[in-house]
Structures are given as C-alpha cells and as structure tokens.
Length: 317
Length: 317
Image 1 (tube, rainbow over the protein chains, first blue to last red):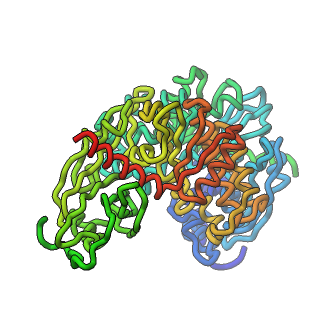
Image 2: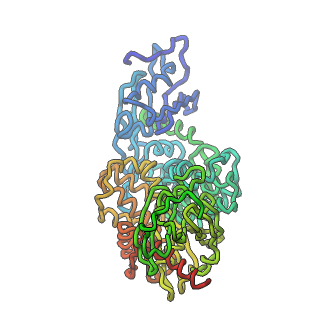
Image 3: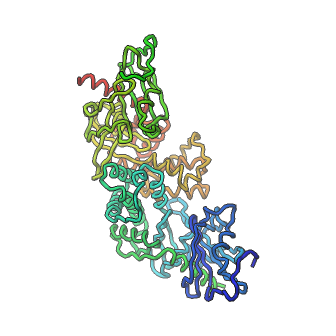
C-alpha cells in the first residue's frame, strides 16, 4: 500500500469490514464500511463530489474521508461507482452496453491504486433508444442493489438526471434518462418562475400544490406551455409563492412519469431515492394509476449494490 | 409639456411624424417615428428594457432616447406597448380579456404624462385555457400590426415566451404561451448541456443539426428525455459542439410547434420575429407540414401595430 494513508493503529482495527464502498457522484462523495453480510457498519459523506475536486486530487479527497478505516496490518479493498469513472473523474471506465448485469459490471471494472489501498472503479451502462445514445454512471450500482434477480421490474432512480430502467432477471435491459432534476434547478435558480418562488420555504411541503402540478404534467404533454402556467398562477396569486415550487416540481415529475410509463410499461416499480423525493414519486405514480411501488433508500441501494458486486467478484475468482 | 425635455429647435422639426411608437420590453427599448401612413421615418433602440431601469427612472430613459424628436412648437403623442405596462413597468395597465381586438386595446389604454409629452400605454391581453390563466404584453400590438382584419389566422410570435394566437377577423380569440426561448437560454447558459456548447459559434448556422432536433422535438413528446439526447450526442461526439446549440434549438422549437399545432389547428400561419429566428420557425413549420407561412419582421409589426392603434383612436374620438 503506498504511503500517505493515515492508517489507524492495530488496536484501532475496525472489525468486520469486508469492503469499503464509495459512491462518488458529481456533487457528493459517500463512503460505506460494509460487513460480510452487506450491512453498513459506518457511513460518511462529504461535499467533495467530482465537480469540487481541483487538479485531479481524487486520492487526497478519498484519504481525507476514509484513511482511518484502513489499518497497519490490513488493507480493505475499495469499490467505487458513479461519476468518478467518467472523463471528468479519476479514471475513465468504458460503459457496458445494455443488456448488462452485475457480472458484466464486474468484468468491466478497472483496478486502480489509491493512497489507501487497492480500488476498483465500476463503469457505467449505455444503451441506444430511438437512435439516441443514453448513459448512466452510478445508477447501475443502485439497480444491482435494489432490483430482484428474477422477473421484470421498472426501476426509477430520480434525481438531477432521472433514470428509468427496465430490469429483467437482474439484467438492465434498457433505460431512458429524464433531465427532471436539472430542469427544476434551472427554473428555480435562474428563470422568471424562480423569481416568484424566491422566498418559498422548501421544507414546508405542499402536497395539494404538488398534486395539482402532477395532474397538469401527466395530462398535458405540452411541457413548455404548462411551465408558463406556474408563472401566471404565481402572478395571479392563484397559487401562493410557497406552494409554487411544489407545483413546479409536480409538473416536471408528472411529465417525466407520463413519458416514462408510455415507454416502460406498467411493471412493478421500485423507486430508489432519498426519503422525501421517493415519497413525491410515490404520490405521482399512484396518481398515474401505478399502485405497486416499492421505495428503496438511495444510500442503502448504493451500499447494497457495491457489496453485491464485491461478493460476485469473489465468486467469479 | 413638463420641463426637462431636450426639445429640438423649431428649425430642427422632424417633419411628418404622426405618432411616436415605443415598444418597451423586458430587455429592449425600441422607438419609432411613424408618419401618417404608418411608415417608419426613423427608429432607435437601446438596451434600457424595463429590467435595466433602476428606481422607476422610466421617464429619464425615454427622454434620453427620443427627446429631440419633440420640438418647441409641437409635441407629438407617444404610444407605448410591452412590459412597460406591467407591475414591474411604469404604470400597471389591466389586461383585456380574450376575445380582444384593437378597439378593446384602445378603450383600455391609459394616459400618462411623460417629460416628453402625453403618452398612452397599451395594456396586454389575458385568456384562460384549461383553467390556467395566460397573458401577453406587447405581442397583442404586434398581432394588430401583422394580422388580417378578416378570416382566421394563426399568429406565432416566437421569443423568450412564444405566443400562439388564433386571430379571427382581427380579434385575438385565444392564445397559448410557450417558454421556449427562456428554456433555451437557461440550458445554454446554466446547464450540463450548455457546458458542451461553450465554444459554439452561434453565427455559424447549422440547418442540418437544427432539422435533426426539430424532428426529435416534433416526434417525441418526452421533452425531458429528448433534451438529455443533446448531452449524450455531445459526449459521444455524435453531433459537433458547434452544431449542438442548433440541435437543442430544434428540439425546443419542434416541441413547441408540435404542441401549438395540436391546439391551434392548421390555419394560415403568420410568424412575427426577427429575420433569423423567423427563418428557423419557417423551416420547422414546413417540417410539420405547414406550408402556408408568412414571415413578418417583429420591428415592422410593432411599429405598424402602434400606428394602427393610434389611427383607430383618432377614428373613435
């Protein structure tokens, strides 16, 4: 193991760690100490997403977060997923083409040396839909962590770029990306709609306004027009400023769901998200007459996915 | 006439001016010296849109642009339209509800005293579609300037907030707004798509990339997904960075046209826009099998609309 790792003393050994899992996205860096049964023993998180890393200092950021999880006598393997494997990340790992399963991901991952022991970076998955390339990095690992090994499921991972994946017998058969979260952020922060919501309190959830937006987004495919309604409803005080943000969120999520269901069919649905966002998707999916919705916490899915890949790697050796 | 107006000398009289027309939008201030036949004798323009005016200094901005168009012996009336009549403008003028024609606009306008003579501000038009309020300010005057007095026409005024108005016998029967221009700007300036286009040369028009985007926007109602294709096509270098901006523009205009035509029917179409933008809409409308498209320059339509309102005012007195 190269030097520079602030190793814990041996009397400081972290017992039971089987693998260190790292979910390294654009804006967040999350680390999990995972035991042999896939349980999270400890987790840490920082805002050192790859967008915050200057001059390729990925190793330093990783050491700062988890160096003391390693010990003098034992170096635990590190498994990394997410945008860390992109062109802007540590090492670019090629995509596995759909259909792709956990075995494909393990065969495709790349070994790297970190200042804290040996690491492996999981690559993303790509697919072609309607002559357009589509890509994911990180969500493939969440899907491995959340989807069943048999049967067909629709797995939704909402976020900046929401993923809708059809998973058949644990294999990602196809998927589509929706820019829902990013468009919401743009409209909130920079648009003429955002101005009307500038004093809105996002913690005060407004389910009525959200449902009103979902109904619009589900029912009217004319998104560029429907969005303007958030402006006029704000101007005419038809919806209070504090509720407008939830109305806007409802429009966008409704639009995503309307399109997603048209392409993916009504299979049992798994939503992988943080709790609040997952609840909003469940409300909206129910409004679209999808009642079979299971929510999986995104952190849990990431740790579980990394552990499953690690375990499979052991079986394949 | 109140003081402060830098009047021209009488030997400096601007002959033939019947009315001074002002199109005062959010980002631009345009002034026209118009003769009794509706011809533009002179036009001026500044970046003093209402968003650039601090502390309500509208009068000062107007004076700075057109004071020398007035003379000691004669004060020409000033007719203003656009966001200048909004809550953020000089005086808020109520909307005329659809259906509304030129006569309604004249009856609804409000007189103000400016430092350069008497002014009248034209109010906007509102309508309800699918229980949502919709509004325009400024475009109603462009429509008066461009639409025929008889028959049914579809008038499109593309821009930050594109308007699609059905005009019947010179009366705005209904309209819908599309946030096309604003969403394009947001995506260009602030999004993960914009990053891929950061070195794009907008002056190098790329009709092929634009058409490819229009085809997507017209054919796939899943806008939040289709937009992501601009990202992946950029990443996979499937479309060159310089062409990506036109591809994105095509997607958004195609999406707008797909929705607009569904609601407005295929009447003869008038597009009121600056030349370049009008040409793109003509290409996209042709691709949507609308062949009867007339282009009207936006500046001409504004001046013509203000003059027609002024003339009607004279007839109504």
